[in-house]
Length: 233
Ligand SMILES: N#Cc1ccccc1NC(=O)[C@H](C1CCCCC1)n1c(-c2ccc(Cl)cc2)nc2cc(F)c(F)cc21
Image (cartoon, rainbow, N blue to C red):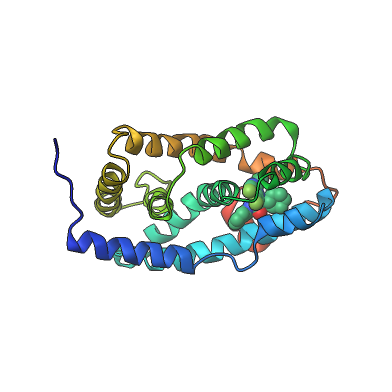
Protein backbone atom coordinates (compact mmCIF):
# COMPACT_ATOMS: atom_id res chain seq x y z
CA UNK A 1 0.00 0.00 0.00
CA UNK A 2 1.59 3.27 -1.12
CA UNK A 3 2.30 5.60 1.83
CA UNK A 4 1.34 9.02 0.40
CA UNK A 5 2.15 12.20 2.23
CA UNK A 6 2.22 15.88 1.29
CA UNK A 7 5.66 17.44 1.78
CA UNK A 8 6.13 20.82 3.46
CA UNK A 9 6.84 22.50 0.10
CA UNK A 10 3.71 20.95 -1.39
CA UNK A 11 1.63 22.22 1.50
CA UNK A 12 3.02 25.74 0.93
CA UNK A 13 2.38 25.47 -2.82
CA UNK A 14 -1.18 24.29 -2.11
CA UNK A 15 -1.85 27.26 0.17
CA UNK A 16 -0.50 29.76 -2.39
CA UNK A 17 -2.70 28.30 -5.16
CA UNK A 18 -5.88 28.06 -3.07
CA UNK A 19 -5.45 31.56 -1.57
CA UNK A 20 -4.91 33.03 -5.05
CA UNK A 21 -7.86 31.07 -6.44
CA UNK A 22 -10.27 32.27 -3.76
CA UNK A 23 -8.92 35.85 -3.81
CA UNK A 24 -9.18 36.30 -7.58
CA UNK A 25 -12.90 35.72 -8.03
CA UNK A 26 -15.42 37.88 -9.83
CA UNK A 27 -16.94 40.23 -7.22
CA UNK A 28 -20.54 39.97 -8.38
CA UNK A 29 -22.17 36.56 -8.00
CA UNK A 30 -23.77 35.65 -11.32
CA UNK A 31 -25.75 32.75 -9.87
CA UNK A 32 -27.39 35.07 -7.32
CA UNK A 33 -28.33 37.52 -10.11
CA UNK A 34 -29.79 34.77 -12.26
CA UNK A 35 -31.79 33.40 -9.31
CA UNK A 36 -33.08 36.86 -8.37
CA UNK A 37 -34.80 37.53 -11.65
CA UNK A 38 -35.43 36.36 -15.19
CA UNK A 39 -33.54 38.40 -17.81
CA UNK A 40 -34.22 38.72 -21.54
CA UNK A 41 -31.90 36.99 -24.02
CA UNK A 42 -30.36 40.39 -24.78
CA UNK A 43 -29.75 41.16 -21.10
CA UNK A 44 -28.33 37.66 -20.58
CA UNK A 45 -25.95 38.11 -23.50
CA UNK A 46 -24.73 41.39 -22.04
CA UNK A 47 -24.35 39.73 -18.62
CA UNK A 48 -22.41 36.88 -20.21
CA UNK A 49 -19.99 39.23 -22.00
CA UNK A 50 -19.48 41.19 -18.78
CA UNK A 51 -18.88 38.00 -16.77
CA UNK A 52 -16.55 36.54 -19.41
CA UNK A 53 -14.58 39.79 -19.65
CA UNK A 54 -14.06 40.09 -15.90
CA UNK A 55 -13.31 36.35 -15.76
CA UNK A 56 -10.36 36.90 -18.10
CA UNK A 57 -9.12 39.73 -15.90
CA UNK A 58 -9.24 37.60 -12.73
CA UNK A 59 -7.60 34.73 -14.64
CA UNK A 60 -4.61 36.98 -15.46
CA UNK A 61 -4.32 37.99 -11.80
CA UNK A 62 -4.62 34.37 -10.68
CA UNK A 63 -1.87 33.13 -13.02
CA UNK A 64 0.56 35.71 -11.58
CA UNK A 65 0.32 33.75 -8.32
CA UNK A 66 1.13 30.37 -9.85
CA UNK A 67 4.73 29.67 -8.70
CA UNK A 68 6.95 29.58 -11.79
CA UNK A 69 4.42 31.10 -14.20
CA UNK A 70 6.08 34.55 -14.26
CA UNK A 71 9.49 32.98 -14.93
CA UNK A 72 8.15 31.48 -18.19
CA UNK A 73 8.89 33.27 -21.47
CA UNK A 74 6.55 36.30 -21.59
CA UNK A 75 5.06 35.36 -24.95
CA UNK A 76 4.44 31.84 -23.65
CA UNK A 77 2.59 33.33 -20.66
CA UNK A 78 0.25 35.11 -23.11
CA UNK A 79 -0.15 31.96 -25.22
CA UNK A 80 -1.13 29.96 -22.11
CA UNK A 81 -3.66 32.62 -21.05
CA UNK A 82 -5.21 32.88 -24.51
CA UNK A 83 -5.27 29.11 -24.87
CA UNK A 84 -6.94 28.41 -21.53
CA UNK A 85 -9.28 31.38 -20.99
CA UNK A 86 -12.38 29.73 -22.51
CA UNK A 87 -11.79 26.44 -20.68
CA UNK A 88 -11.19 28.31 -17.42
CA UNK A 89 -14.47 30.16 -17.91
CA UNK A 90 -16.48 26.95 -18.49
CA UNK A 91 -14.70 25.30 -15.56
CA UNK A 92 -15.59 28.30 -13.39
CA UNK A 93 -19.19 28.20 -14.60
CA UNK A 94 -19.37 24.49 -13.79
CA UNK A 95 -17.98 25.14 -10.33
CA UNK A 96 -20.56 27.89 -9.80
CA UNK A 97 -23.26 25.45 -10.95
CA UNK A 98 -21.98 22.71 -8.60
CA UNK A 99 -22.12 24.98 -5.51
CA UNK A 100 -24.35 23.69 -2.71
CA UNK A 101 -27.62 25.66 -2.89
CA UNK A 102 -30.88 25.54 -0.93
CA UNK A 103 -33.05 22.74 -2.39
CA UNK A 104 -34.73 23.62 -5.66
CA UNK A 105 -32.42 26.54 -6.45
CA UNK A 106 -30.10 24.52 -8.67
CA UNK A 107 -33.12 23.54 -10.77
CA UNK A 108 -34.19 27.19 -11.04
CA UNK A 109 -30.64 28.18 -12.03
CA UNK A 110 -30.53 25.40 -14.64
CA UNK A 111 -33.86 26.55 -16.07
CA UNK A 112 -32.72 30.20 -16.24
CA UNK A 113 -29.57 29.16 -18.10
CA UNK A 114 -31.50 26.88 -20.47
CA UNK A 115 -33.75 29.83 -21.32
CA UNK A 116 -30.98 32.44 -21.29
CA UNK A 117 -30.71 32.70 -25.07
CA UNK A 118 -28.14 30.00 -25.70
CA UNK A 119 -29.10 27.90 -28.72
CA UNK A 120 -30.62 24.47 -28.07
CA UNK A 121 -27.84 22.34 -29.61
CA UNK A 122 -25.29 23.47 -26.99
CA UNK A 123 -27.47 23.04 -23.91
CA UNK A 124 -27.05 19.26 -23.69
CA UNK A 125 -23.24 19.08 -23.98
CA UNK A 126 -22.89 22.06 -21.63
CA UNK A 127 -25.08 20.60 -18.89
CA UNK A 128 -23.58 17.12 -19.39
CA UNK A 129 -20.24 18.70 -18.54
CA UNK A 130 -21.64 20.70 -15.61
CA UNK A 131 -23.33 17.61 -14.16
CA UNK A 132 -20.16 15.57 -14.54
CA UNK A 133 -18.40 18.24 -12.47
CA UNK A 134 -21.23 18.26 -9.90
CA UNK A 135 -20.95 14.47 -9.52
CA UNK A 136 -17.26 14.74 -8.54
CA UNK A 137 -18.08 16.80 -5.42
CA UNK A 138 -14.68 18.51 -5.69
CA UNK A 139 -13.18 20.34 -2.73
CA UNK A 140 -11.78 23.81 -3.37
CA UNK A 141 -8.16 22.57 -3.40
CA UNK A 142 -9.06 20.25 -6.27
CA UNK A 143 -10.94 23.01 -8.11
CA UNK A 144 -8.01 25.43 -7.78
CA UNK A 145 -5.47 22.80 -8.91
CA UNK A 146 -7.62 21.64 -11.81
CA UNK A 147 -7.84 25.23 -13.09
CA UNK A 148 -4.08 25.63 -12.63
CA UNK A 149 -3.41 22.40 -14.54
CA UNK A 150 -5.71 23.60 -17.34
CA UNK A 151 -3.81 26.88 -17.62
CA UNK A 152 -0.45 25.04 -17.66
CA UNK A 153 -1.30 22.90 -20.70
CA UNK A 154 1.98 22.71 -22.68
CA UNK A 155 0.48 22.05 -26.13
CA UNK A 156 -1.46 25.28 -26.50
CA UNK A 157 -0.98 27.07 -29.85
CA UNK A 158 2.19 29.22 -30.11
CA UNK A 159 3.84 27.95 -26.90
CA UNK A 160 7.58 27.84 -27.68
CA UNK A 161 9.14 26.25 -24.59
CA UNK A 162 6.67 23.43 -23.90
CA UNK A 163 9.14 21.63 -21.58
CA UNK A 164 9.21 24.62 -19.22
CA UNK A 165 5.40 24.56 -19.01
CA UNK A 166 5.38 20.77 -18.60
CA UNK A 167 7.76 21.00 -15.62
CA UNK A 168 5.40 23.33 -13.72
CA UNK A 169 2.32 21.38 -14.75
CA UNK A 170 3.89 18.13 -13.53
CA UNK A 171 4.42 19.70 -10.08
CA UNK A 172 0.73 20.54 -9.93
CA UNK A 173 -0.33 17.12 -11.26
CA UNK A 174 1.75 15.32 -8.62
CA UNK A 175 0.24 17.49 -5.88
CA UNK A 176 -3.30 16.87 -7.15
CA UNK A 177 -2.61 13.12 -7.42
CA UNK A 178 -1.52 13.00 -3.75
CA UNK A 179 -4.50 15.10 -2.63
CA UNK A 180 -6.90 12.77 -4.43
CA UNK A 181 -5.34 9.66 -2.82
CA UNK A 182 -5.48 11.27 0.63
CA UNK A 183 -8.95 12.73 0.13
CA UNK A 184 -10.52 9.59 -1.43
CA UNK A 185 -8.53 6.50 -0.32
CA UNK A 186 -11.51 4.31 -1.26
CA UNK A 187 -11.65 5.74 -4.82
CA UNK A 188 -8.26 4.98 -6.47
CA UNK A 189 -9.56 6.15 -9.88
CA UNK A 190 -10.71 9.55 -8.65
CA UNK A 191 -7.57 11.39 -9.88
CA UNK A 192 -8.01 9.86 -13.35
CA UNK A 193 -11.70 10.86 -13.37
CA UNK A 194 -10.75 14.47 -12.52
CA UNK A 195 -8.29 14.64 -15.41
CA UNK A 196 -10.86 13.01 -17.69
CA UNK A 197 -13.08 16.05 -17.15
CA UNK A 198 -10.39 18.22 -18.77
CA UNK A 199 -10.91 16.28 -21.99
CA UNK A 200 -14.69 16.95 -21.81
CA UNK A 201 -13.88 20.59 -21.04
CA UNK A 202 -11.72 20.93 -24.14
CA UNK A 203 -14.46 19.42 -26.32
CA UNK A 204 -17.10 21.76 -24.89
CA UNK A 205 -14.78 24.74 -25.39
CA UNK A 206 -14.52 23.98 -29.11
CA UNK A 207 -18.14 25.22 -29.39
CA UNK A 208 -17.60 28.50 -27.54
CA UNK A 209 -17.48 30.83 -30.56
CA UNK A 210 -20.61 29.25 -32.09
CA UNK A 211 -22.36 29.37 -28.68
CA UNK A 212 -21.82 33.13 -28.65
CA UNK A 213 -22.59 33.94 -32.29
CA UNK A 214 -25.75 31.78 -32.19
CA UNK A 215 -27.04 33.43 -28.99
CA UNK A 216 -30.67 34.53 -29.47
CA UNK A 217 -29.95 38.28 -29.43
CA UNK A 218 -30.21 41.08 -31.97
CA UNK A 219 -26.85 42.58 -31.15
CA UNK A 220 -23.78 40.36 -30.70
CA UNK A 221 -21.53 43.04 -29.26
CA UNK A 222 -18.23 41.88 -27.72
CA UNK A 223 -15.68 43.74 -25.61
CA UNK A 224 -12.20 44.20 -27.19
CA UNK A 225 -10.79 41.77 -24.61
CA UNK A 226 -13.33 39.08 -25.59
CA UNK A 227 -12.51 39.60 -29.30
CA UNK A 228 -8.89 38.96 -28.34
CA UNK A 229 -9.61 35.80 -26.35
CA UNK A 230 -12.69 34.28 -28.02
CA UNK A 231 -12.63 33.63 -31.79
CA UNK A 232 -15.44 36.09 -32.38
CA UNK A 233 -15.94 39.22 -34.56
N1 LIG B 1 -18.68 33.78 -18.55
C1 LIG B 1 -18.64 33.57 -17.42
C2 LIG B 1 -18.65 33.27 -16.05
C3 LIG B 1 -17.58 33.69 -15.25
C4 LIG B 1 -17.58 33.38 -13.91
C5 LIG B 1 -18.62 32.65 -13.36
C6 LIG B 1 -19.69 32.23 -14.16
C7 LIG B 1 -19.71 32.58 -15.51
N2 LIG B 1 -20.76 32.15 -16.31
C8 LIG B 1 -21.80 32.97 -16.71
O1 LIG B 1 -21.90 34.12 -16.37
C9 LIG B 1 -22.83 32.31 -17.60
C10 LIG B 1 -24.24 32.95 -17.57
C11 LIG B 1 -24.19 34.39 -18.10
C12 LIG B 1 -25.57 34.99 -18.15
C13 LIG B 1 -26.54 34.16 -18.95
C14 LIG B 1 -26.58 32.72 -18.42
C15 LIG B 1 -25.20 32.11 -18.39
N3 LIG B 1 -22.91 30.89 -17.24
C16 LIG B 1 -22.67 29.87 -18.10
C17 LIG B 1 -22.28 30.01 -19.52
C18 LIG B 1 -21.03 30.54 -19.84
C19 LIG B 1 -20.66 30.67 -21.18
C20 LIG B 1 -21.56 30.26 -22.18
CL1 LIG B 1 -21.07 30.43 -23.85
C21 LIG B 1 -22.81 29.75 -21.86
C22 LIG B 1 -23.18 29.63 -20.51
N4 LIG B 1 -22.85 28.69 -17.49
C23 LIG B 1 -23.21 28.96 -16.21
C24 LIG B 1 -23.51 28.13 -15.13
C25 LIG B 1 -23.85 28.69 -13.93
F1 LIG B 1 -24.15 27.93 -12.88
C26 LIG B 1 -23.90 30.09 -13.78
F2 LIG B 1 -24.24 30.60 -12.60
C27 LIG B 1 -23.61 30.93 -14.84
C28 LIG B 1 -23.26 30.36 -16.04
